[in-house]
Length: 88
Image (cartoon, rainbow, N blue to C red; front, side, top):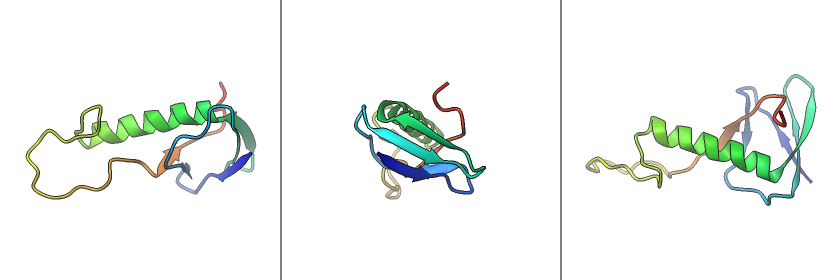
């Protein structure tokens, strides 16, 4: 089991996929705690990554299709927004 703690911005630190059957416990800032599977957290991570790519005008693979003028940061997210009720 992996224990994650929600920060004050409503995010948990997650920079990669977890094994699908892994049990993950998330402690929220309001004091509640919830257990989810790795596959559910992977879905949330993928949604956050898609939102990041959309906001930064990247394609589905994470490449910018505009001329490169500067080196941009890594094509990944490090924090995933979560809220109580993830299993619903």
